[in-house]
Image 1 (cartoon, rainbow, N blue to C red):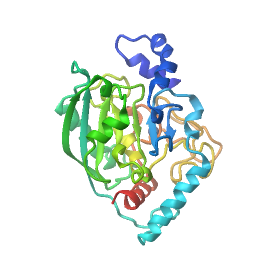
Image 2: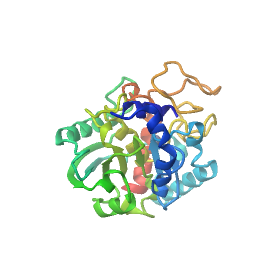
Image 3: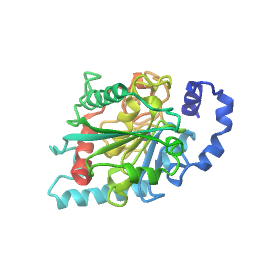
Image 4: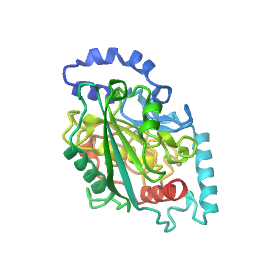
Length: 317
Ligand SMILES: [Zn+2]
């Protein structure tokens, strides 16, 4: 609910109560893949999806991928990596270097009147944010992931239905460009900050692969606390195979990454010293895969870098 409240408060001309009152019907009207708890919807249309923000059903969001599904994904990934002669996900990296330059196709989905038609300048600023965050440039402890992003194309559509993320499987399939290694970003207006597909679902449904990001989360956008462009960083993290740092809650498996301390629930804001699990380590509130404010985000860890490189090698290279 926290996330919704902050999103709602940020929407010009919309009162908190009015938007809150629309949550249930708005959710019911969304395509199947976008419904339900805020974060994970592994297989509703054959393509995994993960969202930042949105309806925010408290602690339900990190249960959308069950422990059994999570184990199956890890096992499948290990098998693919073994077939490619690469170390598995449990090895903590093992020197896998499968990062590279990612071509980025940006699809501006404005409405029929041009609302949401972000500028070319905002888009280049967004690409710069991706390069800064994946380059580990926001903190001394941040990992340089090795991934770089190059703008490969911008297209613009003026379709109110698409702008509102209606028929999203259709519009994504009709507009997606590039192969498995290409990041497609659709800029829309919806009740989420962003939604991503996972790399292990690419083969089943390549046409919808990519991330949907609220157009007002770009640098210069109007969503208070979430307008520095780091929603795209977070969603691209899912696209590269990362879970939330609070995936799995207070368990040792947690998000499958050894150097992100277990976290019981999503963070809101930037509460320094938060510790939601009795397991060792404070909550990684500055991690791009938590739900903190953009201004609070400063890093990926080296364990996350290793996982993204492994996932890229398994599914996108
Ligand atoms: Zn997320």
